[in-house]
Length: 409
Ligand SMILES: Cc1cc2nc3c(=O)[nH]c(=O)nc-3n(C[C@H](O)[C@H](O)[C@H](O)COP(=O)(O)OP(=O)(O)OC[C@H]3O[C@@H](n4cnc5c(N)ncnc54)[C@H](O)[C@@H]3O)c2cc1C
Image (cartoon, rainbow, N blue to C red; front, side, top):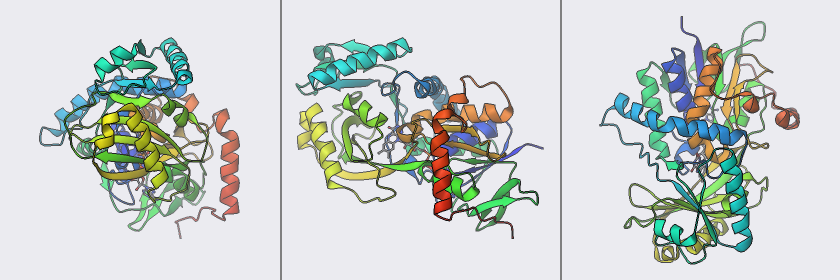
């Protein structure tokens, strides 16, 4: 009989894992307390980036992911047929612009280090940047073109991955929150409790995005995943005037920062429907979902520096989501040595859309006992950079009296 996996969370990470595991012959069930793509995966942008990652493990994962997206989109189209909405995959490339002298040197140094790690990072003259983006403002001091960057519509991509997983036999239970662990008489994790009763599986995979910390704590293996708020503006539809994903070089600093205070940087792109997405902010405010005027005004002001014509654009709406933040800036992918049978695929912060396919391939290979295409050790729960944070998370769980309640009566 096929080995069974229960996935907690039907965001893009759970969806990609469900598809990869179902295709490999696992018996897959996905539970979500809400609906498919009801969490962060529909409250974000859909950029698939290498440009914002410096040399290191996350870049290796992103390069692996980049190598998978094109073929996967083509496979999804074939599997789901033309009637399924397009995931709007667009390998448009990215353009990173420095608008200050000091920012220019930092950007050029960063690009040089990326080239050393195999990234196609092309330094171009400001005039050339304006040829790529005719509406770019006059402040460009330096620019780097990243042809490998791409974009998808993230909610549709999540739906498509789930629909494909279903075709390979996966079951999806919406409106089904995980309430606690189910253990056998010797204390081994054998499933989860839900309002629909116990759901048993040989492996439980937590892919609950920014709520993974809560779910992991509930199941008895605390993980230091925290929500990192992000907000965006969306303009009304307009003539296509922005042709790449364009952002200010200060975005890279914001991504890698540990600062919990508000940070804004300009990240601007057109979508297939004709709107312009203007992001984004980063702030650690727990799960407080109030839209903040200071965040939105900061984002807007910086976007206008890049593209002055946006000062006259009409804003149609704003929205925000919670990135699943890890204190050592790497996702957690693999089995939890503290609890055999419990697995994690979470903590992708602002890159979960891009990294989803590579994460799913790693999970599949690790569960099969096969050699993954890239080294999975840097993403393991047991990595050294996570040790002190795991201890702190375990301490917090004890302090908040959140010891796991066994769902077995
Ligand atoms: C403003 C913003 C912009 C972003 N832009 C990008 C970008 O351009 N490119 C990119 O790659 N990434 C981007 N991200 C990050 C990206 O959105 C996330 O990394 C990604 O969506 C995380 O996916 P996930 O599946 O882990 O989590 P989610 O999509 O949040 O899914 C988790 C699911 O778990 C479910 N769940 C929670 N608790 C339980 C429970 N107890 N029981 C059952 N189910 C539960 C939730 O209902 C949810 O559906 C952005 C994020 C933000 C906020």
